[in-house]
Image (cartoon, rainbow, N blue to C red):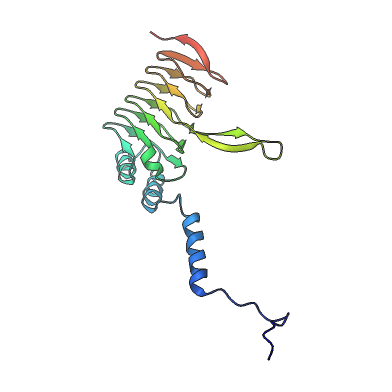
Length: 200
């Protein structure tokens, strides 16, 4: 009898352990950025009404692993995104007020100092990309941290881009797009943000 395989015969199936291993590998890849505790507790916080149950919201965020200082108020939803343990890369100092909603891309750490006040719909982005070839302009990514100094006031709908440090006592006017460091005790505004005046 010939050992030749008939051209129309069914291919030999891969062993079950191999298939399970592949499934496990895909599941690990698909859920790499998902942390059940963070997802669950942030999900609970999202059901709380705006400007209500602020202490409960803070408790849920702290239980999820976010460092939040004493007497800080978060009056709405915070959304953190990025790879890995995002809750460990976002920290808020004491006596802060975040009106919310706030979106923070925490591919790199974001640090808010003490007495920082943030208006609603602020976006903090820590990831930039190289400009690629014409085949694909969005190239490799470059995460850079954002640091917001003590006493800073950030107006509504401000966007802060990667690598920016906002100096102590600065004010960022509503709607500004901050692309570079802001000097302490200055008022900046516009797109891109520029110094409007020095503050006493």
